[in-house]
Image (cartoon, rainbow, N blue to C red):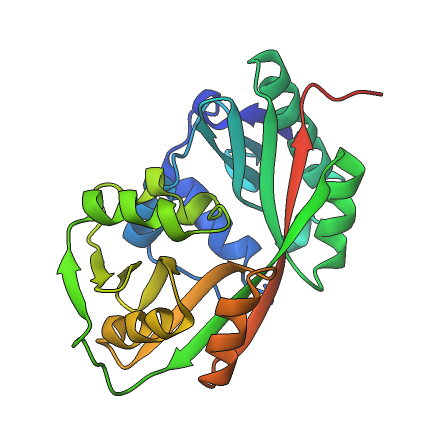
Length: 266
């Protein structure tokens, strides 16, 4: 018999959750098969909350999950999935309703998530649960083989975290937010004319500058591995989106950010 229970109350460990994630994402539109250490690190950096997260358990095996993070009065769906052979039974809906109910009872004000454009089944479920689209997000890969740091200097994250607030025109998504970046191995650059880029291993977490030319310099300075990946850029940022496209970036994913305001009003 399948039971829906919080992860903290399931009696299972992160290894069981990792196995379920690999199975559920084996046919996902974007290849996503992290090793155990990478999986655990991602959960930790995003604030995984075992009591707020729910799993569907059958014969001591996780067959579905809603991995949830908590930050103040907000909650965020890190990832959800159901093993292929157990789909079509309404487990995803039951897991979502359980997580939302617990959030309401805990005084949470809003629930957030992202869904890849084209994943119509997931978006339909989230809308049924009460989520609405708040904005569109673009993800880019940019080959930039000739780094030039002449107008930029390395800096510490505390310094750039203050500077980026001055120039940024939109809030980063949950996984790119400042709260998730503290303690990570980051590379941060300041531009002499005003601007900041924060990244790690070719992944850009945050970028903002006073002028498009400064944005281009920052991207070049950060391209120490020969290419960059920008995840969840607000589509409404015409300056940044136009620049990376001009530089030849490939947009490989479009996502919808969705929000559920709590308590739900019927």
